[in-house]
Length: 259
Ligand code: SF4
Ligand code: SF4
Ligand code: FES
Image (cartoon, rainbow, N blue to C red):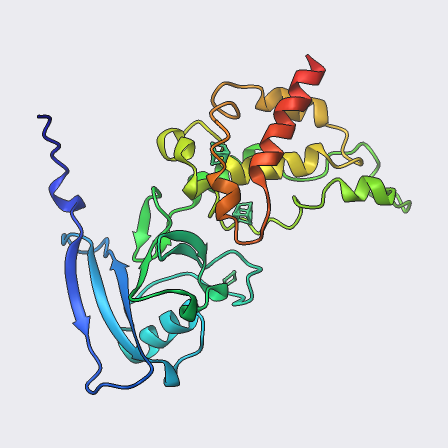
């Protein structure tokens, strides 16, 4: 039988336990992944009990409560707490989602919270998104038009043309989709992943943009685009209800049409 030996410090250990001093009717328990880059210790999972009478209803509320009342070293990203900034993406109860719009009551049993999977972790629940942002930048996510920038004339779109970017412009770059894509897990250094590709599609389908052809030429690559095997995890994971898998398939069709 094949034996797999994982690096010693990749094993996630049981961590600290923070139990309530007395039982309360509204008790909830959370297990949270912890990783401290300044320590040589392995990552661990800490256990926390909280009284929901003292805490808001969302997973992000619980994290903020724990940080302010129990363990100030707990580290996570958040900003808007309205599901619009994309900062608080993490894996909750086995699914990539936004902590600020995930109700604790929708999770049965212990609420298990991990960072986005298959990303380098900076600390605790904070993934390193540098590569993901470089890939985003590589698709040149801005309008490319020869219209002089000082022109006072608007570049109008018909309602139909404007509708073409529905389902793409709403992306908040939380990367829940890319972190749920098996192709991105294995080839994330070369495959652009669903988040960057949805953004590429957003500009390809914009009637005002004059660079569709060169954008498609850039994407016509066995790794950048064609590592997508239509597994659809990305679409299932998107907390904004977007469909990056469909956008990718439309990019592939557009490339076929220019060939
Ligand atoms: S459809 Fe493509 S991008 Fe989406 S999860 Fe599958 S392989 Fe990844
Ligand atoms: S497509 Fe959805 S999951 Fe992916 S980055 Fe955009 S908002 Fe997040
Ligand atoms: S804090 Fe902005 S999306 Fe959750």
